[in-house]
Image (cartoon, rainbow, N blue to C red; front, side, top):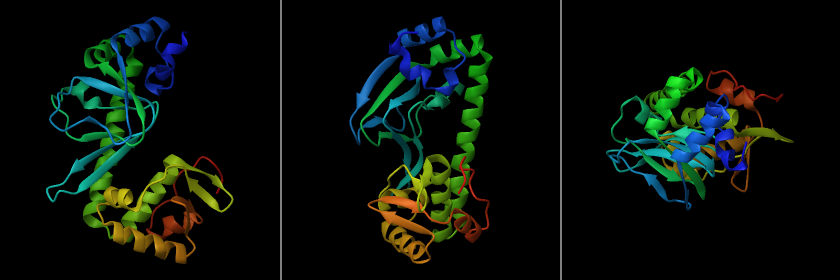
Amino acid sequence: MDNQFWYFKRCELFEQLSEEQIRRLEEQSQVKTFDRKSLIYLPDDTSDSVLLVASGRVRLYHITSEGKEALLTFIDPGELFGELSIVGQQEREEFAEALEKSQIVKIPGDAIRELMTEQPSVMLGLTRMIGLRRQTFERRLKSLMFKPNRERLVHLLLELAERYGVPHAEGVALRIKLSHQEMANLIGSTRETVTIVLGELQFEKLIAVRRRQIILKNVRGLAESIHTRPPDLGFAN
C-alpha cells in the first residue's frame, strides 16, 4: 500500500479496511496543517465531517458560563474526533484547538457512513469510541462537581499516567507536559490551587516535578490516597 496512506494506517478504526477502501477514503479526504494554538473548529460550526489527527495533538474544551475553559480531553495521533457528526449532530458543541503544530485529516461524514455499511468493524469501533468518550466526559464532570481539588488533581495524574505514562528511574513519567493552568482547566480549578497541591504531593514524596515533567514516584500510594485502584500501566511499577 502506498506510503501516502500512512495516517490511515495509524488509526485503529481503519485497520481492517481493504486497500481499495483506504484509497477511496484518501481520495475523499483533505489534509490540513494547523499551527500551535490554532482553532480547528468552534461551537456551532457545521458538523459534517470526522477529523483524524495525523501528527501533533489536539485539545477539546468548553467555555463555561463564568468564562473559564473546561478542558474535555486530548486527541493524539491516530485518533478521531468530531465523531458525533456521524450520529446526526448538526453543529459542533466544543472548541477544538491544536495544542502543537498538527496535521489534521478531514474525512467527510458520508464517506464514513459508507464504510460503516461495508465494514461492520468500523461501525462497532465508532460506537465503542463514542461510548468511551462520553464516559470519560461524564466521569470528569462528576469529579468536578463532587470532589475536592486535591482528589481531582490526583485523579487527573492517574488518568494521565494510564494514557501517557512511561517507566522512569523514579517511578512513572508522564510523556505529556502540561502547565499548571492547563491542569487547572482540566479539573475546574485555579492555577494557584494546582501549584499548592503539586507542592504538597512533592513534599509527601508521591510525585516529583522536573522542568514541567511530572514523575509519579508512588502510583499505588496516590491511588490509595483517593480510595481508587491504581491505573493499568501495562508495565511493572
